Figure (cartoon, rainbow, N blue to C red):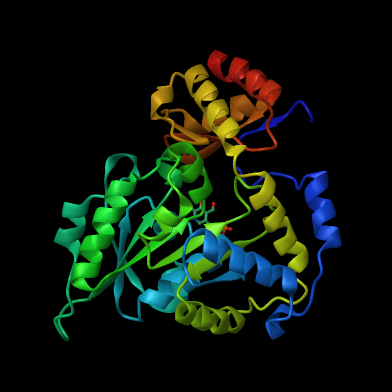
Length: 333
Ligand SMILES: Cc1ncc(COP(=O)(O)O)c(C=O)c1O
């Protein structure tokens, strides 16, 4: 491990030697023909983990979110989400560009669900007057809020209400594994609160590529058609699915270590560690860009995710010694 400590994102992980070996040995076939046994295994396993009927392997979390959202929101309808949600802030308008979906947002500290705000925003289909709300999206953990977990009780309450008004719930679970490890909530319990989900293998789990849409068989059959239409049909991609299967076997429980490391770094930065739920620390600083530059000049890479917001993310490429080195630099700065 070099002296540089890279805390910009948990997408920066390198595949481990064991992961590379699993990839090299994976049986593969043409996945557009449905003949890649490793992809099928991964899709079945992930669907089962969340208690849903089926899943679809995609190259990115953004594509999984686009396919998931379009499965529950038709062109001209809207989805509600928290104002710093990844689907609103960081997918470059994909849901508008590809799916003609509009969004309205609520804002709540730490990216939390605000059911009364959601109920106030919700618009039933009233004919040719207002945009109808077809779905509500939640993000768990919430990236830009600082890896915050959403309480299961809130997710359940939202889902019950959404069902009662005929509205779908989309879960952006790019880091649902972190939420599961941090709270002990079973993955199936999270799965039961969403109609359709997107989950990622390429964040804290350390796979080089790969996400999945998770939902009903009908949703996934349709998503498969749309994935191909968008240019996302892949061939002998079991070589990548194998990395995901390896990550599920070996890299889920270890996320607890990343969470401990994040709390240590929070303390070094003067952030209350009890506010750090998982592997992301955010801090508000007027000099965010300068701080990022000064940290980099001392061998610690962090990122500015807003003009006054600095973000640090721990992951399997940053061991305890690296965290200690980073803590010394960051506390001095
Ligand atoms: C919460 C969340 N959702 C979705 C994505 C999109 O994933 P990808 O970069 O694979 O498109 C990210 C990426 O960091 C994310 O943090």
